[in-house]
Image 1 (cartoon, each protein chain N blue to C red):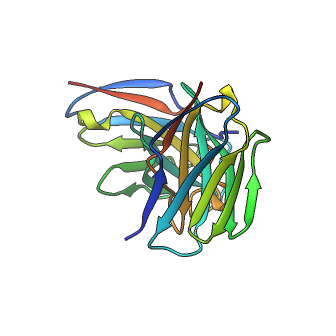
Image 2 (cartoon, chains in turn cyan, orange):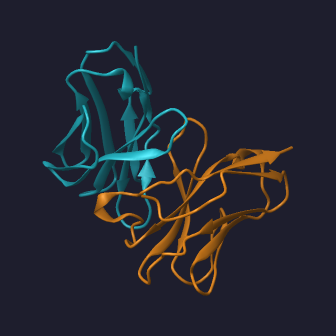
Length: 110
Length: 114
């Protein structure tokens, strides 16, 4: 079966610290992969998407970057976190109809 | 930018049908209507999608008007677990957003009352 794994579930990081969130999918090959962010009380914002290994497209200029080192692995990173980076980060994939989202990482920058 | 308009919130009694409206007056001929929902602190969940015909699955029914400018998601027997934010999305891709992702609006916060 097709599954998506995202970790950690929650994270508290100080301002200026680095960030690495990982997402992996199972049971599919060559998926489109996405990172979304949801700030408190706001809608979902698409941050990055990838159609293949090493191919990253950015939707919003920001303090974050993404990488896809393997077909089923998608990583969200930051060198120095800002307070405004706090939010709920969601990984998603699509193959065929609809999108499947991970369970999310709630990041609090303090 | 979201291409849909939804009421910000709705209430529905448990056991009754919940009817969630969505306006998409600028929809083009090759665009699908998708519905997702997001339960608090979870990722969005795909519900249903359609192009022109009405659709039904184990979760819900989707009624699309003949001119395709609006649609209604119907949860036939709402339960407390259906309390969530429901997003109506239009997309030209069969996968629901193509390679470049889904565009979410603010959705409708559906509250099921006991």
